[in-house]
Amino acid sequence: MGKKLTDRITWVGKVDWTLRKFHGDEYSTHKASSYNSYLVRDEKTALIDTVWLPYDKEFVTRLKEEIDLNEIDYIIANHAEVDHSGALAELMREIPDKPIYCTANGAKILKGHYHEDWNFVTVKTGDTLSLGETSLVFVEAPMLHWPDSMFVYMTGENVLFSNDAFGQHFATELLYNDLVDQAELYHEALKYYANILTPFSPLVTKKIQEVLALNLPVSMICPSHGVIWRDDPTQIVKQYLIWADGYQENQITLVFDSMWESTRKMAEAIARGIQNVDPTVTLKLHNAATQDKNDIITDIFKSKAVLVGSSTINNGLLYSIGGLLEMMKGLKFRNKKAAAFGSYGWSGEAVKQISERLAGAGFALVDDGIRIQWVPDTAAEEKCVRYGESFAKALME
Ligand code: FEO
Image (cartoon, rainbow, N blue to C red):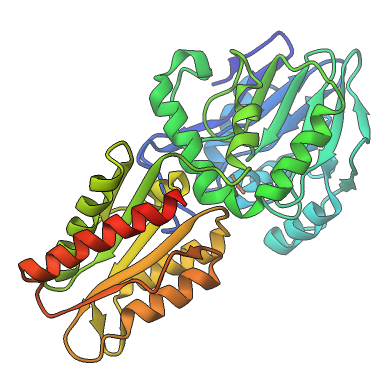
């Protein structure tokens, strides 16, 4: 089962090849995922994290093939979320007295999840646990991804076990960043950042700067999902600093829902106008009703501006756009401009409502948006083209 990373570190996780949805329906995993768990052996032995609950028995069975469970001295729970703590209950049935090292918040959350009074040893940033020649150094990393999250740095091996940070929902048996398709890896790492870590960007920057200031040598970064960064391991750290700093590319995303295609026609005409003014800008058009919401969010993350469109229905906006705007608000995007558009029959409230919600989500409104009544004719389409031109020009000011 285990895969040896170094003489002292063995990967004992689970590659979940068929996973297509994570966090319920909150995150699409087109490339599946993995739950990385690591067995660290020196004079003392530590197990860092476990796997998601459905694989708890399989995990413990396979772990027994790797080691006599009684030889595990310490369990490190970097994060209480069930994708990493899910096999703890099964494991603790076998070795109930072993200490579980976690943050104070980690102990609270693990108790809240499993309702067990395990032997919790709470740690803070800078605390160390000697394994013999090597030691584990604990670094609290609150909100990366939950209040309890922490990193563990192993001296001697110079390995950072970063839990959710620097991860990707990307299944591979190849383990390492240099062995997989680089474009796929970059995309999955960016999608993961965009959809999970964007709201915590200020904390990402602060934590990375705090860790960099320690000047620790890093030979590998071992996250809890996806590949291990061994080739130029700090490349992902540098990338996180870029992504956390109001990231944008020369891209504009138009996302809409459309009852009878009028709002779609508007989107395409606006896009033509944008292209008239800025032929080099990357344009992405998404129908929120039919396209994957996390792919849309990934494109919004990459964009300097976004246009959100909906037909008006029942004095409001369409369901898929309502849901997407809720996601956009929660993700706390920074440094992005926006406007609304949409067709309507009589009352036509959607554009105003979208504008208000975009402003509330922290987007800088370029203008009041554009509405077209009924099906756009040639003149109305031309109006949308002109609108796209003025929108693109406004971005250049
Ligand atoms: Fe991979 Fe926040 O759990």
